[in-house]
Image 1: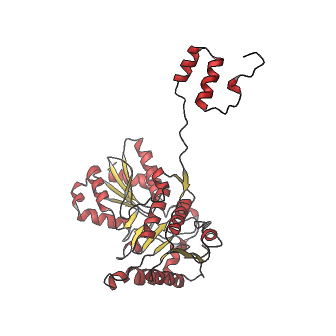
Image 2: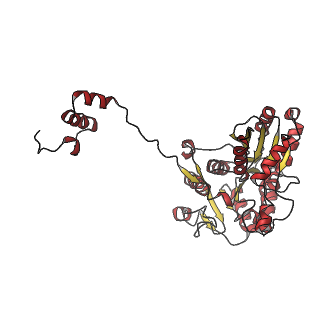
Length: 378
């Protein structure tokens, strides 16, 4: 090789990479240098974790089920051409057309009844309420028609339908658009009720709900739609499902059990992080399902930590936390408690409009920390 010849390392080669690199190194470096370099292990950057918002996760789940089963369809106000009031159904109308993504009039009683009838006829409707506050207009269809038909028909007529939409407090929308319906629908036999927190929850639970042969209420949260979470590799599969009726321990702990669902799970994890600096290790349980409730996971945790705090955004009387308290009192975990259960709930008032009052009407991280210290007698 003369001085005018280009260095083979700098010249693109059509040889296989390993052969090209070896020849190039042998021409430019000493044998000892070549041998040492080839023995090195080159560092490879780990692939970036996939970040998916809750909105995108629900969209993916519905898209996969619409593609998988031609009996599945979506109907509701503005779900088609407008891509949904919160853009949860973005792109589905363009992909599946008018017959499977259906815009409805502003009549919850009407389109919920159409959806229930379609389910009885063998289809699998996803009925979206723009907010679950509006489901009050259709509660006769949800409770009397959907939830009770399988029992009243002696098991001959199933109603495979999903009622979904945002639930609970949002921001600045006052009393008629801010209440939590977990206790309302969780009270009714014949319904399954799920309440996702993360993107993994949202995708796995919406897919399980669509495949279930019973009516399922999916209580989403408007303030969580835009929140990104890491989606684990298994959750990226089209076969990924989260079983209805199974809670998840989001953080291991030994001193106190915190049980929550939906958006307050975030506050519980924040409180646990703060308290860990004080030597208090909190076990945080994400319920995922309201009905049927996974009381076994809660009991096992209470038997380990000997303390229990429940956190929810709904009203206190006859709430989800009240039911957990009753179930713990009636079961084997009661004898393991070292202190009374403490509940953290929304204030027992209609949601105020003023921001300062609204902030004081829903659980905050400081309220959870106070409750935990109260349970631990600190």
